[in-house]
Image (cartoon, rainbow, N blue to C red; front, side, top):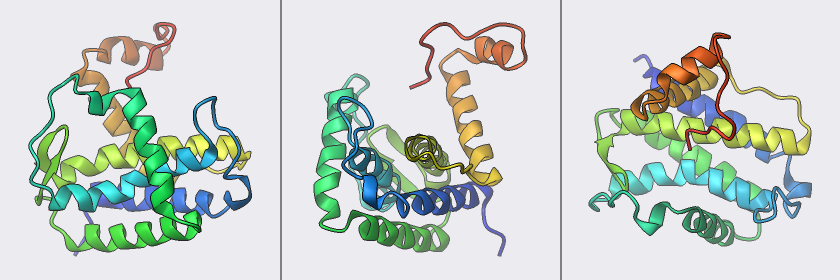
Length: 193
């Protein structure tokens, strides 16, 4: 049976991210920003592994737009809580999470319902957002560790497709398309997140 392209992109992104994590063990306490250590960033990105199973098992209703859950402070707090949950060997824990979620994704229909704080969707519709998280934070990690490494093409395509979709749904597609084709520039500070 052929693997769904969304699952393949996610699995490739996960494998690439884990390969970077295994090279980070001696740098986990380094600061990524004034608020985050490298370990905070890695633990935050690892949620792209953990949330797949958590949301597949959940029946919680979605949260309202503007709920404090979505605030930057809440995101940072969840990252810090995730650090604690990784235990005394964070790298080993993240490798185990990636193995577990790979098995789950390969054994679960892409049409399986998944209940996230953003709403109910299928696993196939959810995975691109996790692919983008793994790719973007993997790029952050590679830059911080000064590792010359690019995600697999499948993962990059999946992350770019998700970013393009999010851009279009926010109403920013024209400005982004113009910038990407040399017909304009993105406004200062522009971000889809």
